[in-house]
Image (cartoon, protein in one colour):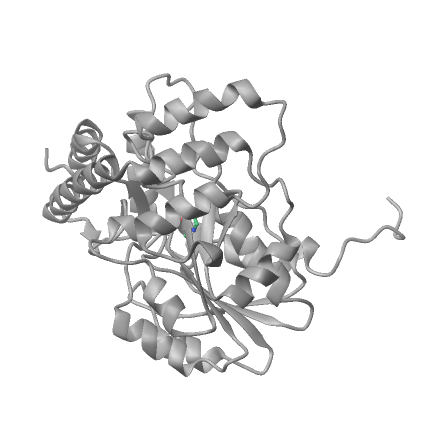
Length: 361
Ligand SMILES: *Cc1c(COP(=O)(O)O)cnc(C)c1O
């Protein structure tokens, strides 16, 4: 290969994203609990809207996402002019990084933070700076201590993935107020809906000029396969992001399915209740079997074993039963497994297998 053709700085530093596995060799009856998907799937109204869009596939989609932005704004009590929609929240996170970080800049991420953040930082030519967490929780002081003249962005997911832990509103305010005005704080709210009564950081966006919240249709709305997410920030920030957004980034089918999903408030509420109920049940069962487990504010639990070897052996036992969970060694948590909260039958199956593995069933 010719040396003359060289990728931009940072590109070759990217370690490819590893997604949740979905197959086990020799197994057909798979229970996939590795990607935090909604076990009940999307709202029937979302499916109908998606099917209904099939008649217009020859038409270009609307470029400003107006109807979807207004639906999101109406349901969440936000200003539709301060919302941007993307191909998953991943695309919104990409717009943010592309617009606000480049060569010579630093992007702060945390020890167990979502693996897309360093990928996006490198893709923009910026340097990801990883700071420690304390007992699997984001540490506000560690972030503030890492801020330099070169820092441009701070990324956290709250509730966090893969730990499931969450910062309080007081901690978030202390973090934001401690950041210099030239640093944009990115509050990734992919799991907002699973944290009872949480607004995902919308009030913080309204209160401070340097905060952006991202949200997704991939988790509670059960539309991970369709790729839709959104962000909410001050108007000036949204105007910047829209400059790098492709005009036709979302198809009409994506927008119409998402609009129907966000308007189906009863279904969303039911999914929240089911998740909370089985998350509590599963956590209690794990703890009773001697598996460590922090309180989770999301739709998964981080099961903590005594050693990395024990976690690997439990993963193998689950796989032998056709259950796929997520290994978290890549998140500096080799002794843990992240388990998506499934439906009742799924949770019972997981407890059965782990119980036999631990010799308590
Ligand atoms: C799942 C997830 C997302 C959502 O990504 P999409 O691109 O919207 O599917 C974002 N952030 C975190 C931390 C996640 O776990």
